[in-house]
Amino acid sequence: MTTPAETAYHRAQDDAGRVRELVLEHLALVNHIVERHAWATGPQVSRDDLFAAGALGLVEAAHRYDESRGVKFSSYAYQRIRGAVLDHLRHTDWLSKFAREKLKELENIMGRLRQRYGRRPTIEELAAAAELSQEDVLKYLSYREWDAVASLERPAPDADGEADLRNILPAEMATPLEQLESEERLERLVRAIHALPARDRQIIVMYYYEDLYMAEIAEILGVSESRISQLHTRALYNLTRLLEGDL
Image (tube, rainbow, N blue to C red):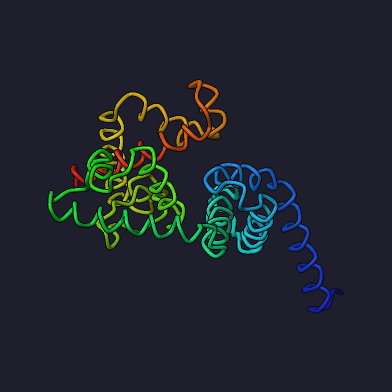
């Protein structure tokens, strides 16, 4: 006869084996997420450190995963791994003092232009008001995107009136009403993407829907990876402007 203690021991052993199996099977997912974020930070952030942070997120996901909820482990783990990687970036303070000062200056200008025009300013308007090139504006906006844990991660709207693209994207819905609302948000997103210039639309589709790395997109379009970083920031910024207008 098996005692309660023995039953508990065997259950713990089974759980430990399940966690180990899930972690080993999904380490490649950690590497995938790290590669999709490391391009934005440059050499000042160690990829090994990002991988370690993501791996801890994976382990946590494996311990917390409840398959009875009907969600695939890869989908559940993706959010936890990505959150752990972004938390690491947020806490390492990887931006230089100069870059952070320029970023704050640009945000202040953006706020003033928003009040003046009653809308989010264009890249051209920001560049003119800040007396910067459009390339520099895009560089600082890319810092803003990742320093704030990415536009797709921020709550919506935030203090600056930012639209949250994550809430536009479809998610697993529990009720017919929520499903309908999700479909309406998705329709708005599709309309906004189709309204983008061709190059912006192409980059959004390749990065967020075809899941390509920045280096892969750069090779396809025949430009440098740093240029793709700028174009990605512009595309995301313009997409958010369109969604705000729709809202």
